[in-house]
Image 1 (cartoon, rainbow, N blue to C red):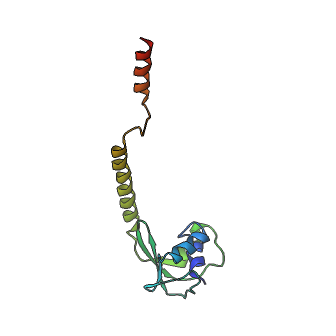
Image 2: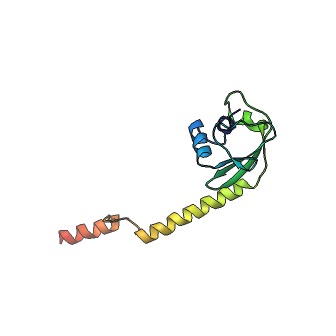
Length: 128
């Protein structure tokens, strides 16, 4: 089975196009070697997928004929790093902290945008 199709059928990515893009970008490794989307997988191969939050490793146990429900794909691969969820949560936390810091630098309301309180003050001043 092709590596892009296997990544897609086991619900590691949302679409087959995205699986191909991951492969072409060099974010998919089979037994430590970068893989093209058309690379054929064998049972027992170790597949590493590099996500923005970190690298996740799997071992191929079986192949799926079609992409079904996510729960049905559970027994077709072995997850070799169970601590990935904590890494993903840490990445999300750091990403939100970066956004928050960026917001502080840019200003609370953006360029040329007044807050409701400021608009009220301006209206009261213009009425006088």
